[in-house]
Length: 228
Image (tube, rainbow, N blue to C red; front, side):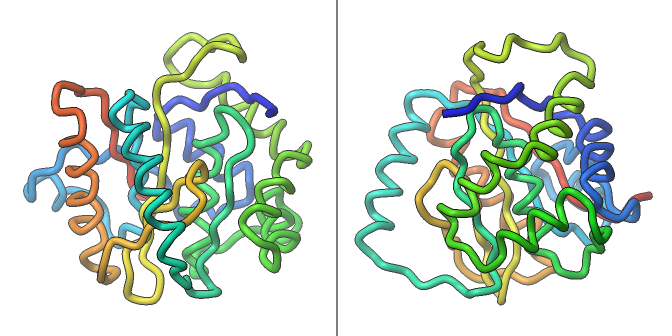
């Protein structure tokens, strides 16, 4: 499996990266400072996706494996307009979370001829597995990811250094709340939601993640929102 440098969970870095991929500058990534209603009300609206960074502890890895097995037996059919790609590159979860966040919001403009638009045009008719394989061969995406992985406030880690955290995205598609994690074989649907309630509904799912390992505190919430 290929390995990229990990991205920092830094809103400025991720916003710059999105712009370089071709996403309209009218959209940015911001910090979500907490899960209380008062703090959630401070998040600019409309929130298009909640990006969640959580630690890959043993408890979380066991939960992921169990959930994947359960989903395999259910044979759930997801809407055709849900864009989901598998992750076949170590440390690419930040990029894949941004892909999921942006490409499941068709009202977010993407520049023609840009890295993200070309990937979407080539990938949209493919299976999640083929989309993941396509990304492994995309030199432009790899280069943009690498540039931005060296940005931010922390020292750039060694490419082979174990990374303890993982990015996933929550989006609203056809009235449902979807958790999109490229390391899982399937999207995970978490019930009904609306564009207006997406943030609070997704936060409730994030709380379930936190309950899996209550001694752990290394969680980060980020939002894809209109640029202020």
